[in-house]
Length: 190
Image: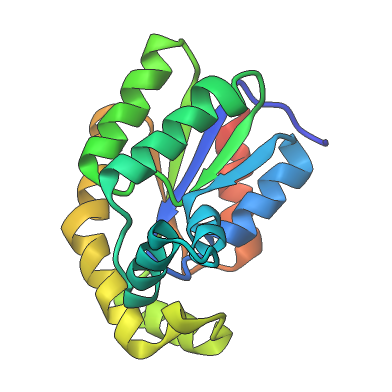
C-alpha cells in the first residue's frame, strides 16, 4: 500500500472493455482494500448447475444486465455485512438507476464516503478492445452490441445520477492506462 484516501468505497463504471479491471487492480495494489465485482460473481454463479446458475449464464452470455434484485442484494450484502470495515473497490455495480440510488442511500445512511469514476470510451473503442481481448463469449460482436444497448438504456442513467450527487469523476478512458491511473490516483488523494 503506497497511498491513502478518505474513500471507503471506490466505484469504477464505464462501458465494456473501458479498463475498469485494469484500474481496479492498480487501486488495490496502491491503496489497499478488496475487490468486489458483480461481473465476477455472475461468471462464478453461471458455472453452477442450478436453475439460478443457468439463468445467470443465459443473461451473461446474451449481454444482458442481471436483474436489479440480484445486483442490489449482492451489493448490499457486500457493504453492510461482508466488507463493512474494509475499503472496497467496486467494479460492475450500480449499473441500473435504482441500484445507483440504493448504493448512494446506503452510503449516506452508514456515513461511508464513496467516489465513482466513469471511464468513458466510444462505442467504436469498445468494439476494438473487445475484439482484441476476446476474453469469452461476452466479447463476441453480438454480445458487445447488446451490452452497449444495455449500457445506454440503464448505466448511462446511473452515471448521470452519481453526477447529480456530486460523487462522479469523468475520465477519458481512451488515454493510456497510466494516464487514467494518474487521474484516478490524484482524485483519490485530494
